[in-house]
Image (cartoon, rainbow, N blue to C red; front, top):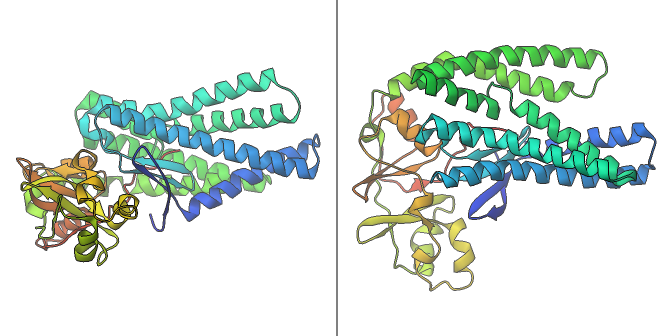
Length: 376
């Protein structure tokens, strides 16, 4: 996914933005400003002010959308590793499919439904107001309605694609059949979007850039369907124990944050380390996660600043690699046997196994990678 920056934390869930998200803000702002400018109902200065207000409120709606995913996921006891905002909106990092098709469908569909609900609320407010304020709210209603509809398209990378995958998976009992269906639908819908984008460009329209961008992405997803299915078939035949690496650097829960900083965290500022107590994994610690408590009282024990194991990705050695990928949602995770730490597993380990390389270790657990689950 490339570079991203953490800008906030909500309920212990880190919030990230990417350079693409800044471009997305600019694109939405330009469309809204152009709409105000064409209307002639306000001055240029008022148009700029109203555009800024509408853009901020719209992205507040995107936060509501992603929060809906996160809240429902946590209600199913699923870990939520973060929320990242990208060019086409954002995605919530959670292994929605690891607890069955129904839960995957619910976590996926709640996003478009929340955006649709916001659109309806804005339409009601627009009808009850007048003047420039009504114009701002009406444009917010239109934008939310548009993004709710787009996001419900039953193709990847939208929420509708994840919801369709869950439905087909539930009906057929086969994850790979479901991925084939949504993969080829993505190819068809992407081709239609690209054609529409070029037509919009020819007619001097305003939507050709996002249509082409998303369309080509969908085509790439569709074209890679069979390769992904084949790889998952191989992963279904292997176990976590075949690819996991050993972990020798662990941090005792009773160690002071100051000592943990000197011994582990400062030397590897971008890594998460396992925290153990009585030989059992109780959480993870990193330089980033320790700053809040450590900056106030560096003598506090590590357990006061760690991420609890319930919010960390964990798997067992006998789980298939296909199941492990789904459960870890593209992140590195700990391998536990009866609550005891026996190794670590991440995307790099699985890629090495696919290349025929043996697991390497020992190593600290590196920072989680982004999962391929974008949605608006």
